[in-house]
Every structure is written in C-alpha cells, then in structure tokens.
Length: 194
Image 1 (cartoon, rainbow, N blue to C red):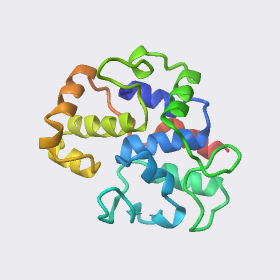
Image 2 (cartoon, rainbow, N blue to C red):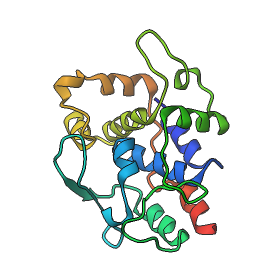
Image 3 (spheres, rainbow, N blue to C red):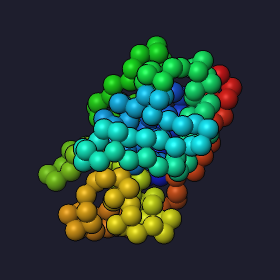
Image 4 (cartoon, rainbow, N blue to C red):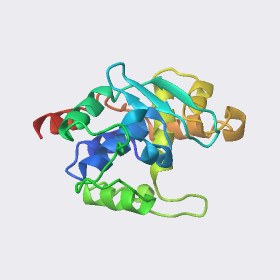
C-alpha cells in the first residue's frame, strides 16, 4: 500500500493526468477501480458535489457527498470542454476511456520515481500495490481522521470489520500517517493551468 506521502507525490507527478486523477479519486473516495472506470459525468452532480454509484459489487446503489475531490473534478470537467453525461469520467491523454490494470498503475508509480520495494514486490502473503491498495489507503486515512473502522470499511464497501479482523488498523499503525492532501493540491494547480 502506498503511504499518504507516496500517494500525494503520485497525484502531483507528471504522469498521465487522467490516471493521477483516477488514483487520487479512488484513494480519497474509497471506490474500487472497476467502479471508478464505469463512472460517467452523468454520475456526478458537480454543482452540489455528489456522486451516484448505481452499479457496485453489493448491487446496492448509493450516493454521497464527495469528500475531497469536487474542486479537482470541476477543473477536470472544464479542462475537457464540458463532456456529456454519458462520457467516461476518466480518460487517458488521448481522450480514450481509461482502462488500467494494477501493473499499469505500478509502472506509473515507477515512472514517477516511487520505488519502495513493498509497492512492487510479491511476497509469500502479499501482492504488489494496485488500486485495491488505494482503497486501503482510504480506510487508513479515515482512521487517522478519527472515523471508526466500521465507518471506513462500510464507506469503501470492502467488508464488515469482523471479516477484515482489524487488518487496516494494524496496517495503519505500521505505515504511519502524514495524511492525504484533502484538495489534491498538485492536481488542482495542474488542472487550472491547462
């Protein structure tokens, strides 16, 4: 799992802007990467800062106020010449629907000089970092902000706390916490100058 410092560094890097926005969105809002890939502009209410998720693994549609990324998404919307409701939220540098694998994300981490071994290596009980690790970072950040483990796991629709057995709280204590930058400052600056 990337640390908050690493996640913030990636968001502020020069890698593909769509991928950085998507990674920042997943880390700050707790969605799965497949859920994020399916989002269209019609799933957002940018005026009120709300996202609606009709399709997810629990088949339980939900909506919520965007926690941190509404300003970045407004700039992304304007920078993309106000795309239509049916257009994908996340696109690559060529304007194509962004479809990313965990290997693609790790390659982008490496290109952004994020080389900590744990993010890339496979061990007997661990996999290298991917988008699911960004959801873990969402949970760790929520715990650091004083949210309960129950709140964090349910918000990310990961599982019940009993199913995870305190794994994220333990992980949070090992990694430490500097905090995710709430407004994704690197993205806001980058978006507003394009």
